[in-house]
Picture 1 (cartoon, rainbow, N blue to C red):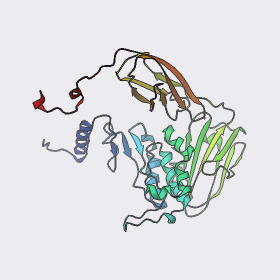
Picture 2: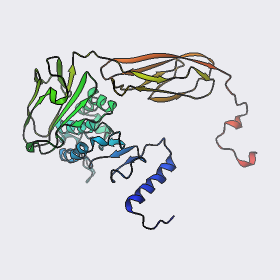
Picture 3: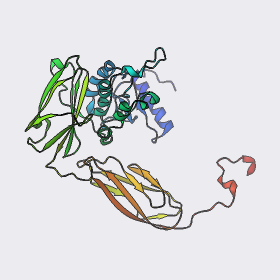
Picture 4: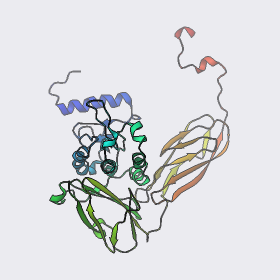
Length: 355
């Protein structure tokens, strides 16, 4: 239908609405290179940066957009920082040179994706990446995966106050729980950089109860004493990701609200859901065991029992502190499973001539 005086932004939103209506609410729509506000309410995820690349310069170019738009995450849409890359790849001549991408550059790419709190996507040739143990270990790093599972954007501490020598915002902080935090420090420059952090400036109570470990290499010593943490001579074009644990805070399980029906009908699908308290310890996942040989994962799931009886539904939700929430629910299932004695009733398509 022709609409005179329609602006480009209006046309974009009209087009997205057509797509959303066509695919429904169960399909994830990702806004790529387009204005930030126009798609809000129609898309599930949204690109917030320039394209990344299999190079440090590509990671560095994407960084300001990811830092500046951290507040959009879960307010406008799920932030999409573009894919991270752990191996070199040149598309222009269709060649791949996986040995020319140093590990420190791969770490910077993965860490930048993690601090966004949103989409966590691999942009590598999977065969090349999988053949390199150090790259495979990088994407399997439990602490990095947990940052993505928590799904919160790290705050760019120096977004408007970064030192001129740092060239770009470089410091990101994420409070994962009352016990555990993640400090990510990039060096975007071509020279070593040093930083000193006071725990109070990060919102942590100063003291000697903290343990600080390097996420990429726990054997690397981190200089920490009293209320101050030091990063000395961080190498050029690199990142440090530090896990800070307050040992005075007891590790706790997530507080989960689960909705499980007490009764169900044989052969009928029913819904289950679970959600951790947003102000408590985050749940990393939700696993359901229905005691009939079927298991599912997800915050919202469905299930169907085919035999009447009373079943135990086991829910497990591991938390970021390393302690899991567990609970068992009883579901009484009654009724008779509807049978289809006529095989024609099971066909997806029936020729009109059969009627």
